[in-house]
Image 1 (cartoon, rainbow, N blue to C red):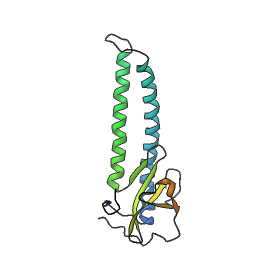
Image 2: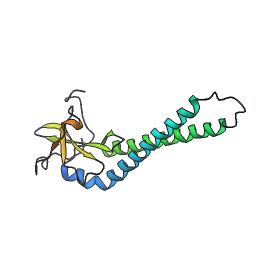
Image 3: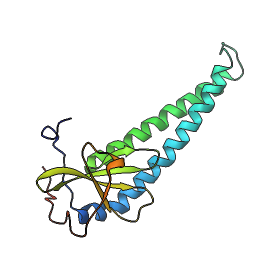
Image 4: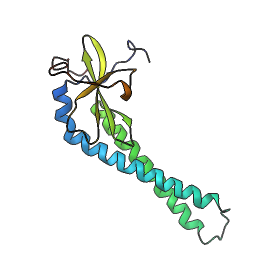
Length: 151
């Protein structure tokens, strides 16, 4: 994605991103917990179904079908969490560790304010194409003047 083509729904200042953290933290925690649970349950289901041929009348087939239904329902719930974050203007980058990006503006260009579950506040940023590995510490006041209005 080219930088010029990227038009975020909202640009956040550091203060606005930090003000959203109570809600965003709760969603990120739910996402992370559900994601880990889904991975583990899918692994167990794959082991169970991989070792046996499910046939009509198999005493375990109903239980396995129910496990698959529950897994699908929780996958939908995970998508709903992601959509809720998107509605807020926040981008989920890592469901396992609750890694989120808040679009912002720095020196006339779009960047991401970067936050991860467990961090007390938004204290890092990175270029659009840099990702977590390119995180840099926010200098005091570096993005305070960012345009936080919806676009």
